[in-house]
Amino acid sequence: MGFRWVGPLLLASLMVALASLVLAYPSSLWAGDDYSLEYLAAVCNAGARLNDLAFYRTGTMGYHPAVAFYVFSWLAAFAALGRGALGSDLTFFDRLIENAPLLFASFKICGILMTGLLVLAWRRSAARLAPAGVLLVALALYFVVTPQSVFRSVNPLTETFALAVNALFVLALVRLAQDPLRIWPYVLCGIATAFAYLLKVSFLYVWGALLAAFAYLALFGVRPLGVASVLRLLRGLLVFHIVSIGLIYAVGLTVIGPFYFAALRRLHWAIFTHGPGSEANASLADVLQSITISWDSGATALPVVMVVASSLLLAVAIATLRRQISPFAGAVAVGAAMAALASVAAVLTRYSETYVVGVAATVPLLFVAAWYAAGDRRARRLVVAIAVGVVLLSAWRAAPAIDDLFAAKVSASSKAAADAQAIAGIAGSDATLLYLYRVPMVGFGKGYVAYHCEVPHINDALLLANRNEQSSMARSVKEPNFVVVDKNYSSTEAEVRSGKNLDPINAVKTVWHDGDELIALDKVWLIRRARSPGG
Image 1 (cartoon, rainbow, N blue to C red):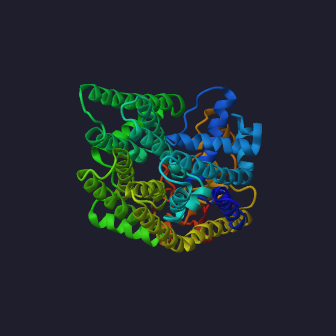
Image 2 (image 1 turned 60 degrees about the vertical axis):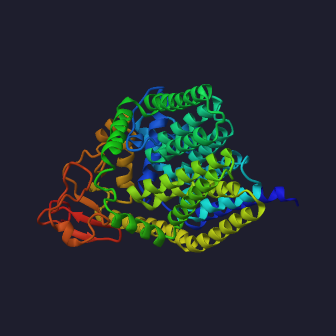
Image 3 (image 1 turned 180 degrees about the horizontal axis):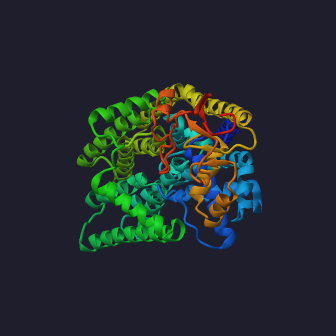
């Protein structure tokens, strides 16, 4: 068996390993994070748009553009339900809710398949830079420098598409470095930038990194730098921005919609001009704490990028001054290092463990660029040895954290299911129940889906039905017999009884009343209102 079979076998092994995680760690859609609910909301909205050939705005693209996630969500639902993923009435909505386990399984399987396709796409984009063995080691880094890379391959969210962003970025960067005076590389740069923005604004490090590579080429790569060359460079820069802005507006207005696209532009402008807001890291101590939290989570991505990218930039600067590096190698190295460092800056500005997946996606190119820039065989062997060492160290640290992530999801799902069964036994079939944010049960989740899918006649029909089990995000009941409160937001009995609003995101206040009965379950509090049956 030749070496050419090693890559396909490793990819097949990866797919099997990810699929085994789905089987080994079964979990519920309702007990997941908001992205599992956003998935159903996107399916509901897209199914209604396609069924009615009409535009319905949706909150699933109202906080991040997340266009790729929106499209992927409906395709995953179509794979599970076929034409059942089309509709725009309450029957269609109920069909999605009833088939949530099947839809969630399809969501995970399609996430695994998409991960495999993105691995192939990235490898194809970087084929000009290194042989297959080096690319395989580089791609291995993506999956081990943070446990979230594996976890989010099975439980997708916007960051899962970070590898797609970087595949397009690598393709554009390589073409730009090859011929900075032609027009087509700049078209690719515009496409890569637009895709990055339409996924999430933090991925605009692609834009900054491409500009850094362009500046390097303009200074050191174009010879002679006469009037004609300058004009061609400026023409390319203009095309770059016309294509990116044009695509962003075209997709923004037709897919996201005028209302949410305008809101996103205002939000992103405010971020660029006034900072990311009160939840951002405000001091060096906050930044260092985020790095520590990331390391404790089993991730090595942040320190790896900060050390390797900084070292690569320094090496390129010295080699450029000594004329010991080609413009192509220098531009690729500068682009790779700037993208990686900018992704770290974005994460450390507002930290979340899932955001580190965006950093992890920049690591493969960082090592490939370092390998390519190293030049001679001995130096390249050293780079590969370092990369293999990082893979082994990172895998050793990430493995138990990956198990913890999946096990926590299983535990939350089983506990929520037990609580739901207990609530059904206590409340009975005739009582009205109100589920508050973010109760990990279908009672809350279906209201979240209806609220964010924003198909008017579905919402109207759901409210008109006035069902006994309601979510605080789509409620018509004013005086429920029981209120279900998430313990993540009200962890103690004293908090529940304090009189605070028990629903942290909704304007309609839900508070403790004198005479109410409090029942402690595993994941939730159950409040029996004093006027309810048995109260």
